[in-house]
Amino acid sequence: MKLTEFPGLNLNNKGQFAIESVLLMTVLLGAFLAVTNYAKQKNLLANLVEKPVQSVAVMTGFGVWKSGDGTGCKAPGKSKVTLGKCHPNSLSRSLSSNPNKL
Image (cartoon, rainbow, N blue to C red; front, side, top):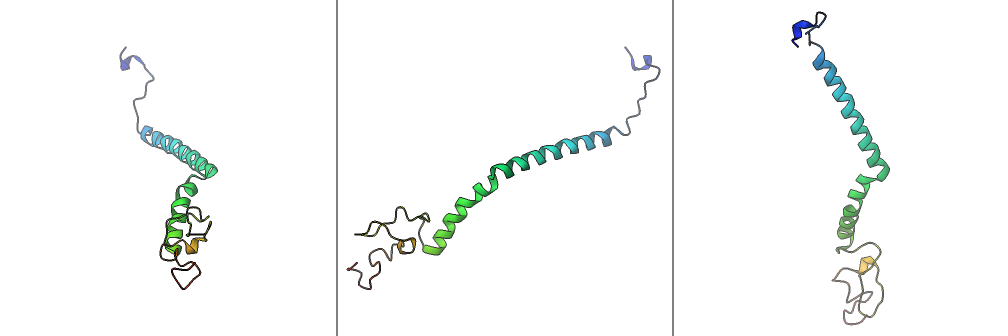
């Protein structure tokens, strides 16, 4: 069947590009809003940034790559030491001016 067989067929496509671009922008905007809404509900950005920033904050404040709860930081003869005394230079002389005496 040839196109010339339809008597009322209009081959003018001048506005098709504009209509398709508006439709494409609408679909992409809807997808973007759906993804951002999901990311807000699940706190994806906060979870992605929070842990590394916390560990860098502890490193700059106390000089060790430990967590803020003090786990893994033990001085000789003590079961638990605060994070401020976790630095390797202060472990042996914790609260003492004599490094051999605790």
